[in-house]
Length: 317
Image (cartoon, rainbow, N blue to C red; front, side):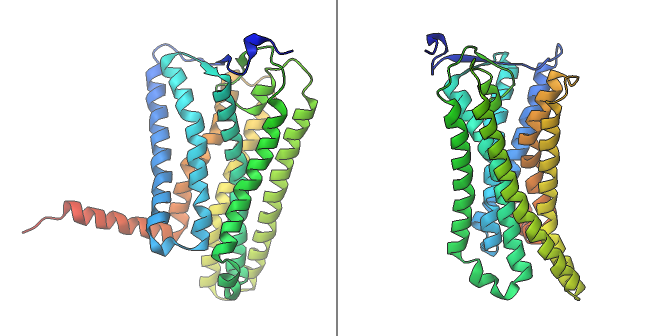
């Protein structure tokens, strides 16, 4: 029977960073600046897609999920971590810890599914341009977006449902944010089933995402090589570069984070920082990468900035 001191509404204690004397407020201000920058960039991308009619296309309707997911990831993690640093408190109630962990795992799975959906859209656009409008209809786009979020939700819900009723015999979260492995460490019983399920979920998400993207980009590469027009090749490459850059960044950061926890010589603070990077790097870089490599978004943003400057800084004679 579960100890009443570790019930559903029990308070947990989070692990902390080692912060040198006088470093609390500089670190907090840097964190706030990073958080606000990530929020503003992703909100700008969302706003452009919503308000600008030239971006009301299947590609951007699917892209809409990416900054939305980035906002979920960075908001689920950063405010709590920064609050703990500046207040020097590291307590969290169990339900809020589970919610944070659930949102962070949803974020991780959604990135890969969204990139897979976007690669499929580019495959149809580049390899079957004459059939693009008949294939990527509004109904198809809604179906793809629903499948992305629905499959991600079901897989993560399955993962968390298995650990929800496990008895807990400790109240220490061995991380600066909550995740499923940290929650499993609260229990004092065998968690082999939960660990296997976690690995299975990760394998399924990776297999589905990577297989779709590899197939799509191989087909796109073959089409580009077969196309004699250099302008068509350039356009095709630029539409895919942004997605490939984001995929590589996410996989490198994710792999580095996982490996950092497998070596005993790695310091605990470095492991915590590596864990945070997976929720910081993509939200910070995704909108910048798309702003640089997607000409339609870049030109739309520049047009909005020019209009804003003319309206607010024009001088009358």
